[in-house]
Amino acid sequence: MAYRSGRHFLQIPGPTNVPDRVLRAMDHPTIDHRGPQFRTLASGLFADLPTIFGTEQPVVVYPSSGTGAWEAALVNTLSPGDRVLMYETGHFAALWSNMARRLGLDVEVLDGDWRSGVDPARVEQHLADDDEHAVRAVAVVHNETSTGVTTDVAEVRRAIDRAGHPALLLVDTISSLASIDYRHDQWGVDVTVGGSQKGLMLPPGLGFNAVSQRARAAASKARLPRSYWDWQDMLDANANGVFPFTPATNLLYGLREAIDMLLEEGLDQVFARHQRHAAATRAAVDAWGLETQCRVPSEHSGTLTGVQVGEAHDADAVRAVALERFDLSLGAGLGRLAGKMFRIGHLGDLGDLTLLGAIGGVEMSLEQAGVTPSASGLTAASKHLASNQS
Ligand SMILES: *Cc1c(COP(=O)(O)O)cnc(C)c1O
Image (cartoon, rainbow, N blue to C red):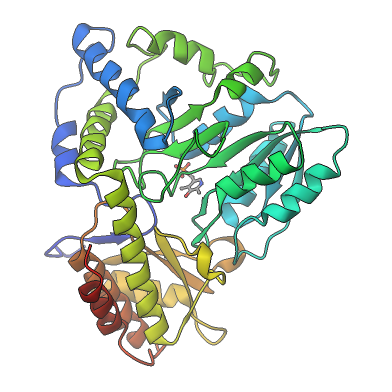
């Protein structure tokens, strides 16, 4: 491949750009993971990581992708044949429910239209009808990365409570953590699942479970087979500043730096920045005369925007032009949305001009792929950013 000058634009909704500060922080020798230097690092992380999840409860850290952390959430809290209520907001919710089935759980899925989030009223109704409390857990995706739709998790918890139902609440925040407002404790979430390579601005390779007291109590009785994923082994070792097996030491150096960066900027400012960039991106989509995959204005994702190209066009052709001509990676339509839409990731380490560069690249790619924009999205987005200061 010919050399391409300048920086590649990685505008998929994860993995995201890894900031230079994080790259430099990881560029150090791997140390003894049972020695004093490591214990200092780990203890600091165990103290500060919960802030990112909005919790005072412990956060378990695995050397895994987000999918591993999904599995950990299920196998630690549930027993073979337990009923789990899931909601198909999109491709990721569907993958998680498939996993639950493969683990031997009895999965009930409420269908969605892949254009909106979880409808809490349907969850409430379903649980109200479950007189015998057979449903042991409700599992939802906070930010559905395949569509660009966010679910109101606090409202899902209220729906469970209104139904007077004891089910645990498990939430996937893999593409919203550290970029969209999230409160594990305040919203009454039992297990929050996270990953390193999206809002946390790290390379792939770390998975997280924030764990409530109720979830830990459930874990003491849960009988799904587990070994590597067992929270208790982790929490016991973590109490001494170590891990039960070799941790991803260099990723933990990066995690230290990423948390410092997020706390320096301030989490509220990080959330506001993402909302502002998302609104600017939607202004561009609107100007192009295209529709967002999300059809509910209050549910637009702060971290990515799904853009429909219309029946007559192929979204993958737009993506191919973006990559070949402009060195810009966009997210593909997943599952049943393949070819129908593409996704612009605007999460992680991003400034206004990076966003405008990406939107300019999308605009040129639409033009060249024959999806002629009706007006300039780049102009619309830049006006939005200029008139809405951070
Ligand atoms: C990326 C993502 C996953 C999968 O994470 P991996 O790290 O690829 O295993 C799961 N759920 C959501 C919402 C995601 O965005």
